[in-house]
Length: 259
Ligand code: LCV
Ligand code: LCV
Image (cartoon, rainbow, N blue to C red; front, side, top):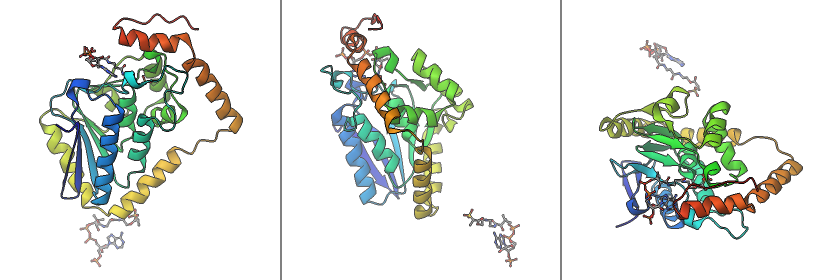
């Protein structure tokens, strides 16, 4: 059974995460599946893509595959990390990507959804940004995705507490577009998708790209970037980072010492 399924019908691509055993963790294998499905949608000139999991999932995605996080002193979220590649592919895809969500969403999967253009969630949906739970130093472009997705104060609350935020709260602050209950959520999503396919694809594509370029246009000096990278290295070289991952693997609460 493919862990990523693709259907293309009437200019609409549907990419379904289907790795139930791993709670749709964003493993290299699953991310490569999503990226190749996006490429297929591009080849078929899809005018909208819907990114979803199987109906009725409890966990939409458990986020980065923790077993793939390096503990040998490498940056866990470097440029070529699968999660980073997935975010970029969604952002540069030349048509709107609609995230249709139900169940809980964790860590890098939150960023993946926030990188999408439109977000429609069921009332059961929750979003938990979890780097601080694992001791992970999130990376600059990843933090920018969150910064562009939600109000500054809420971004801090989500990153510092790592606590789930409900779909209702997310909609209230404009972090997502709609909360729609099952089973209407499918019809609602695909009606929006069909409407978009009737508009001019070239016009939509260029406006999506302008919004991407403008949203990413934040001045940062080389010294500022190097300072951040140096501080991040202290974090992923820390005992706390190793403890966060080990505790997850040993199914116990981490004990962070700040070293
Ligand atoms: C690999 C997993 C995972 C998983 N990877 O079921 O944002 S950052 O910086 O943190 C970034 C680095 C990132 O995205 O890190 C990952 C962030 N994700 C999380 O913190 C979520 C971790 N998972 C959980 O909290 C629970 O698994 C949830 C609440 C998702 C589901 O809980 P539930 O009790 O239903 P289990 O925890 O028993 O998980 C079922 C199996 O899936 C594995 C987990 O290790 C277990 O494997 P075994 O059955 O082999 O024991 N699993 C869960 N999440 N992210 N593997
Ligand atoms: C010239 C018009 C117009 C009009 N120009 O009355 O944002 S961008 O990028 O799109 C930018 C380039 C821009 O602003 O493009 C224009 C965007 N505007 C629209 O898409 C609105 C187009 N108009 C309509 O949807 C309807 O006209 C509305 C809903 C505004 C009113 O409908 P209503 O049935 O009351 P008509 O459509 O019959 O329009 C009356 C007359 O005004 C002309 C229209 O061609 C018609 O002319 P005739 O009486 O000669 O047939 N008209 C309407 N909008 N933007 N002319």
